[in-house]
Structure formats: C-alpha cells, structure tokens
Image (cartoon, rainbow, N blue to C red; front, side, top):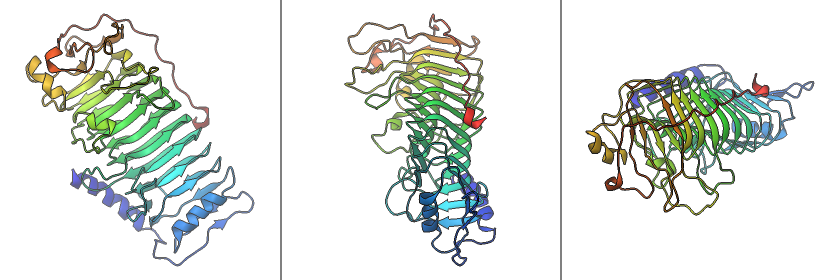
Length: 417
C-alpha cells in the first residue's frame, strides 16, 4: 500500500515543484487589484505569513489565488471573512506542506459563510486537514488532503471536516490517510458529497448527526470502513436522519483500523463497506460493493453505554435496494468475527445486529426494509438488546417484514448549481 500512496504523492510533488517560483524564490509581495480586491500570492520568503495576512485582510467577495509550487507551513491558517474564494493552480500543483507544523491544530480553519476552497493540496497536517465550523454554503472542490506513508494513528483525524453548517458541498475531493474519517460532515443540514475519492483512511466518508444528506458518485476504497452514517449521543445536534447513499463504488476496504484507542471509529471492523448506526431514514441503493472482507452493509445500534435521555440508539427506517455485490464476508474482523462461526464461518453481504430495544425497554419496530434478490444473503443476528454477547445471539436469515418509507427528496444546493 505504501508504494501506491507514495506513487500518488510523487506525481503530485513533481507537478507542484516543477513550476516557476518555488519556495526558494526571493520574497515578493501579494499583488492586488484595487478594483476588485482580489489577490494573487507570489512565491518567496515568508509565504505562510503573507498568506495568513491575506486571509485576515480579505474583503467579502474576493478571491485569493495561490501560486504553483510546494510551500512549507509551520502554523495553521484561518479564515473568518464571508464570501472568500481560495483557489490554487490545481491539485498537486499548489501544495501546502504542513510536515513542519508547530502545534496540533488544523491546516486550515474556516469560520465564515459562502466560502469556496478549490484547486490545491494540503499534506501532513498535525491535526485535521481542513475544518470549517458554522460555515454555511461552503464549497470544498477539487482538493486533495493527504498523509503520506503507511497508516499511522498519529495522522490527523479528519481530511475535510465541515461541522455545524447548512448547505455543504464536497465535490471532487481526495483524502488519504486520515486516522478517523477522510471526508466527514457532522451536525449539519443539507449536504452533498459527490464525485470524490476516499482511500487509506479509517473511515472513508462519514455523515454524523446530520440531516438531509446525499452521498453519491464517490469511490471509497482501501479504508477500514467505506461509508458510515452515524448518530451519536451527547452532541449539540442529534437526531441524524434522511441520508441517501447511492451510485458509489465501495471496494476493497480492508486496510487495518489504525484509529487511536478510544476513538468511536476504532470499533469499525476492517473490511466493512457501509455502516448504518443509530440513524433514521437511510437509503443505500444502486451502489457497487466488492471485496470487503467482513461485510458489505452493517446495520447496528449504538453499542456503548450512554445517559442522554433524548438519544435513540437504534437504527430505524433503513432501505437497501438495487445494489450489486461482489465477494465479502470471507474473513470477518472485530466483533463480527465472533459471530461468524454461528453461521458457518463467513458472513453474508448484509448483516443486522437485530437490536430492537435498549436495556429493559420494550421492543421497537425499527423497519429494516431490504429489497434485494434472494441470491443476496442477509442475516439478523437476533441480539435483541445491548450489552451483547455471542451466547445471546439468535441468528436468522429471514428478512424483516418491513415497509418502504417514502423516498427521500433530492438534495439541491442553490449556491453550488
């Protein structure tokens, strides 16, 4: 795997360093157009300091253009001005290298609305690659965020990380090597993640505690888990619902799980295609699954103790239909490996834990709807409630008697059309 990652990185570096005006050039000030307040940053000494100055002094509606080259960054960058576009010469052509970063913060933090980030690469941040918080109508487009080398728990947690926002677009973004999730959208509403590549992360793409999300046209490969749709307790925004995961390639997600201990995704079994946990109204349709060693689709309740009385730990109203399935389940990892002997040593493509209540509460009709050909295997582990044990399992291959909930409406983002 290192060879594959380094090859991709080498291509980016050759592109980035081959242009005129690399970091060894003499200092040159940013040139600004007084008519429109746009700024083109030139290579040279104090590049990072001059870039941060431009971010601080930017005017709403302006564009900051980054040059071709590889630029060493020692501190994180921040932007809190609305309506700014940051654009480079292209992925692999403009590279912000944070391998010498002091501290453990983000590479770039955005706390402003109507921001567009496009056409550059961020490498080797100590913390998250790019984080945006309370940044409505943000666009991540034609970006690469990566950590090079073998999987390492010391890598930053998230590649691109929009949180607590509305109208989020992540488009044609590549993330490699994140120790949590490559592309993560949390506690947000109205989200599109499309035409992107997530590889060699713990989780490829994760939609968490969010509503009205569409995840389509992506490739999630060589992660521990491909695409995750979670809802977690004790967060400012809960009640995640209405996520459509469709027309994605979810392949070869067999990288070892290298998340730091205690991280929620540290429990994701290597070799998992899609996980739906404690979320409501989730569609998984028309995806192409292949060679995920543990399971293609896992439907599960939240597995840890919690005290938040407003939290619902059960998945409910899940619809799975129209997908194609390659090889899977031949080498189950994690806790699912403990259940495999009960069903002959391997797992079918679709697995539901069968949890329908929490503790001593009454059973809930969680409405798991599966409309796949009979040749697509399914198992309900029949666990009933958490905490679980293998001894309590009552596996059955009978599909649940469930109803299709109303199809989720399409997500459109006016600012990105």
